Amino acid sequence: MTLADDNYARLDEPDAQAPAARAARGKAARRAVPRESHATFDAPSDRADPVSLLRQQGETRLAELLPIRYGRMLASPLAYFRGAALVMASDLATTPATGLISQVCGDAHLSNFGIFASPERRLIFDINDFDETQPGPWEWDVKRLAASLEIAGRGSDFSAAQRRRVLTEAVRHYRLTMRTLAGLGNLEVWYSHDEVDELADRYKALLSKRELALAGVDLSAADEPDVADDEPKELSKLVADTSGKLEIVGAPPLIVPVADLPEPEVTMAELSHIVTGYRQTLEHDRSYLISQFDIADIARKVTGIGSVGMRCWMVVLTGRDSSDRLFLQIKEAQQSVLGDFAGPSPFGNQGQRVVAGQRLMQAASDMFLGWHRSPTADYYLRQLRDWKFTLPAGQMRPATLRAYAALCGRTLARAHARSGDRIAIGAYLGRSAAFDAAVADFANLYADRNERDYAGLKAAVKSGQLAAERSV
Image: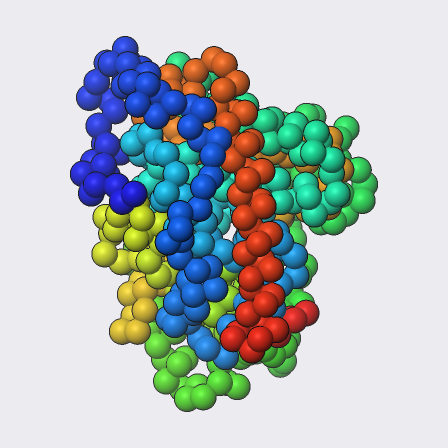
């Protein structure tokens, strides 16, 4: 289905109605779209070919990087799933939808949640990827999260019963959190978030030393970053200080300094203009702060799985001297994968779409988050790796993944409640576990479909239809 454009206005409507009317709306949606109806996934006979969708998506990307994207997707069914957000968006458009709209992530898989620093330098847990965000059906995010958990559980050889507990825990906590938030005031919802020092008390007994080491963070002592060493150590390894001049260390094809690309002067001038121009989208104090930094060097950088092939750059800037450093990421923004199915974004600039969605959904967003339109593409900019950690969900024990799933479910509900009608959604979900069980059933079915699609990608590479570069 394609949702009507006027659904976007609903982001502004909830407070115009009394809570009782909003709850009645949610119950009416439950009658029209029973919670049990979310349990099914029947791929239509005219389902779009996943490989064709990936090739179509690649037409607007850098062709020389696409083999890296496909190679990374071949690593596992979960890696394929992470890169196939467009495929799932196409599939979700054929599933039941309540018509209740919120700002959604659009790619809410388990690895797009993590730990990062707020502008106040407090470590918090939240969604950390918004490339596909726009208004859409809230249940699409819930289903993508659940499917990713099922696929991760299969990859870790969890039993069917263990996987079921992980899934129902995620959706149950989404439901309970949404119902709790439905009873709170608007400001209480807006200020709600999970700080890592609070999470430590809940999860340090579950997280093994190995799991913490894989995450690169010690939750038992992570409540405040050390401001005296505010630059993550991995970033310092990416640059070399030569006689007071910082240069990015190349590691092709993943990191390629502008100086090593064709037409370096033209590229550097365009990117410098983006960094200068984007300051207009920042608050005045932040624009003033960044104006005190000068660009030292820029390099093209390959990131993630689904993003590979997008134009992405890392920038190192210096302040008072070469030790005073700021790292930014310039990332291309194209139409959301939801755009053809949930309607177009209300923003003409795709970078603004990403920034507006992130600010709506996150409890605390990067202070240097902004956007710019160049002659060739839309971009958004943010601080690079601002104390950002992703817990190794694909390598967790069943009990740990279950706790992590609950945390993701709560976090997703809080993000949806900031823009959607939390009272109507809470009323739709209800007190029973009907929706929890239905989404768990859906995730199991979709994981089967994902495995077949993964096999299809492998076949396409083997036949030469797609080129793939592995282990990059």
